Length: 396
Ligand SMILES: Cc1cc2nc3c(=O)[nH]c(=O)nc-3n(C[C@H](O)[C@H](O)[C@H](O)COP(=O)(O)OP(=O)(O)OC[C@H]3O[C@@H](n4cnc5c(N)ncnc54)[C@H](O)[C@@H]3O)c2cc1C
Image (tube, rainbow, N blue to C red; front, side, top):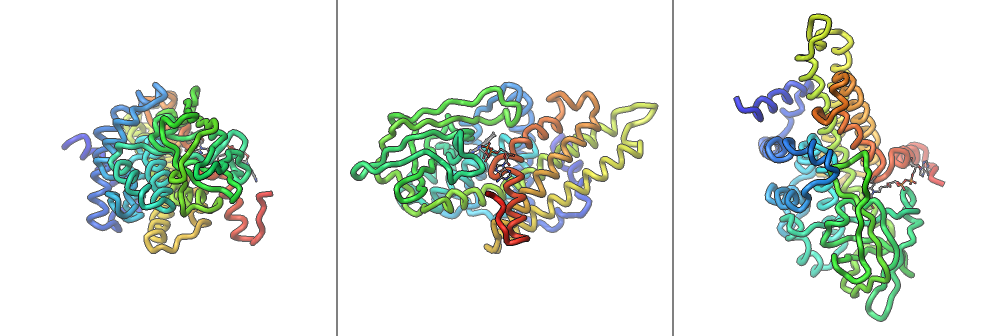
């Protein structure tokens, strides 16, 4: 039996509700392909990337491109046109290795590529989407600013008309893939409300510098983008993007990837804790034989299955084209919180060994602190659900 087959069998044991049986043969094939890629190409390296605080993003993007997961749920322009359910399964398998890797994939596909796909001109789509789906070009998505996080409507980055051109001035903070991007989707105020622009690497006045000393999402590139009177041609504007609704539409796309991805992080933490508990002997027997450990394992397994149910349901709604933003908020609220709790509890089963990078649960937990905050903080999604229930908005 191969190591990877043994790993597949161990995961099948965690599927207490038989959710795998509900997948089509095609879905399972895709899931297994991504799972195998993750086991062979990503998992052996992730502790080192995390410790080094970086990752070989360009090489990885090319590999992800060959795997067909960049912009995989988009149609046309060499994108695979997969279902939302399939995209969700891919996110789960990638985030089972690390949230930073899933962030690379979802920022590329669901934020940068989706923005161009949904709001770009034909020329912009032809130019960027095929190389981005192959991983030959990398994109990022700049919405957050040093003084505008949860409240993007207060952004200061400004684009001013100068003849047919635009002059872009301002900065963006916490931008995933920022310094390695060939194209940045940048949101800015204009005299006509918020608009989106494609800013290309090397344009005069555009610089990117990385954020260092991160404790969370270390296997990911996070940057600050600075625009000092950057001159953009008229063709750099995303013609179909009008108002804040445009970037928020991209975030709804990407949040679905998070809802599914964090299932992977939690499942991996559970698998790690279960495996450790069967071999770690204390008081003369494996710790898996103690009732307190079994209770923890049972709670974790039920939680992971519940998260999977939420992800599958949202996948169905997305594939049916009926999903509502508050339902995405439900998924992010419920699944990220649950994943964090699972990873922390799984770490406790590993005792002291659980605090090293040799085991995944604590790495997942610290990564999930970022996931809890980005793409709408947990509190903001709470307010979305509160507004849906009460009809009263409590943001201000
Ligand atoms: C590693 C990493 C990668 C990221 N990648 C990207 C990216 O690629 N592109 C991008 O644009 N952004 C990115 N972000 C930014 C992320 O989306 C923001 O950090 C997030 O939106 C929160 O903004 P903030 O950090 O400014 O926190 P703030 O908005 O200042 O929030 C601080 C706290 O106040 C709470 N709060 C704020 N308003 C309210 C309210 N009305 N009611 C109750 N509580 C409230 C928040 O929930 C939070 O707990 C990334 C962040 C990180 C950490």
